Length: 233
Image (cartoon, rainbow, N blue to C red; front, side, top):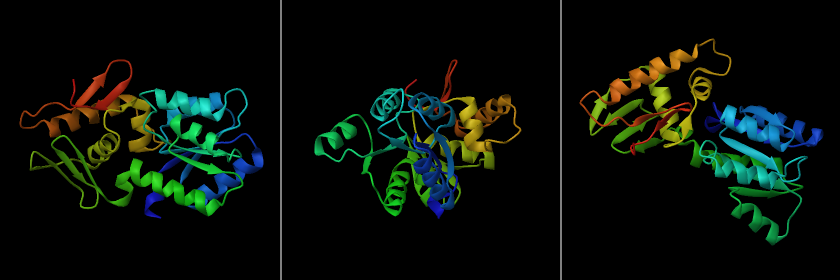
C-alpha cells in the first residue's frame, strides 16, 4: 500500500450511503479521506486541504460536479489536482463533456469499488510520484525519494528531514502556489501544533540549502498567497 501512504482523497458525494461506502473503502486502503456533500463545500475544501485526488459526483446540489471540475481546473491553486468523475451518465457525449471540462478520468455508476481504487492508484502515480519511491526533477534539481538524496547542478545537498519533505511537496507540483496552511498540513500534518511562522523559517532554510553556491532562487514568494517552486520570476 505504498501509494496510499500520506495520500489525501476528497470525496464529493451528496448521497449518504454512497459517500459512506466510498469513505470506508478508501480509509481501509490507508488513504486520508475528507468529504463534501455539495459543490460549494467541495471547492472550499479543495483549496484549503490540497487533496491529491478528488472523487467527484456529477449530480450535486447547488453546483453540478461538472461546474465544480471546471472551476477547480481554472484555478492555479487547484488545477493540478487529479479529478475522477462519478456519474450515471454513460453516453459518449457525456463522457466527452466530462473529460473536456478537465476531468482526468470518468467512472460510470454502478461501478466496481476495486476498479475505482485502481483508477485512483493510476492517478496517484502521475500526481504523487514520490509515493512510488521515484525520482523528481525540476530545473537542475533532482530529488531521489528512495535514497533520500537531493542534487543540484550535479552537487549533493544536505537537507534536514523537514526541508526534504517540503522540497518533495514543491517538486511534486512545480509552479503550484502553496499557502502556509497547506504546507503546514502537507509537511507537519493536519493536527500538528506548529505556528505558521515555522513554515517561513523552514522555507528560508530550504532556500539557503538550495542556493548555497549562488544558484538562482527557485522558491518564489507569492505575496498574500504563499510559496511556489518556480524558476520564472
